[in-house]
Length: 258
Image (cartoon, rainbow, N blue to C red; front, side, top):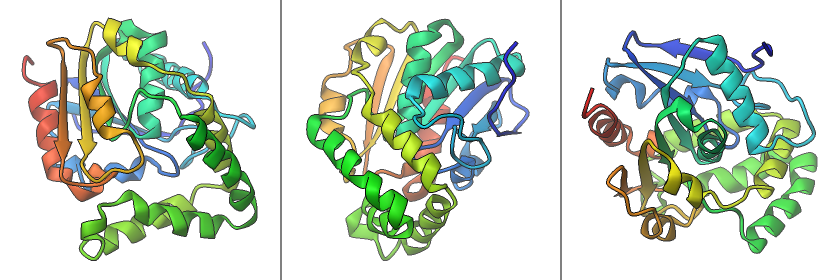
């Protein structure tokens, strides 16, 4: 069996395994605000994705499929046959790859302020143009981008959370950031994955999120009873902006038949 490369932490003694995948320039600590509100029926497996937190960089490009394969190795090492998986932003892209490659392993997938759409040409160009500043002035890259991920109407109220997000981002290396950026450029459309997936699909989105195509993602979700979506009054970071509400939705939607 391949050796697990990913750093992870487990909390809770519940019987429902919920795997939490953070987003770009984040790490497993981002769930701290939401965790106290999650049901004690969950056993939380919090993962550092490749090139983030305490997990290694293993390639010049970390594709979403490569990250998903490492998560699968982790699940195997923990002897987890089926689980709920939740991915924030980039973590959602990784979760979609897992759903495509290993659909029988999932009880549910939650796109948490994420989307099944790939980058359009403009977004790909923007990412490519970021390579230079990531290499030459990483702090400026972080400072310019992180605050824009939050609800612009609540930036004063969220000042402490924004500072926390910046510090977590700065703890990511430029090399890990570049590897993930290159991997995100290569993503493909995963709508068909959700259409054919025999598992619960949950989408949480922010009304003020300018990072993903919120309304297009919601409108074009597969029309199935197992698919449900929520739009919250926040930006891209519901785990920091609306942690109690997000947790309440997860408790209700993922545990309704448990």
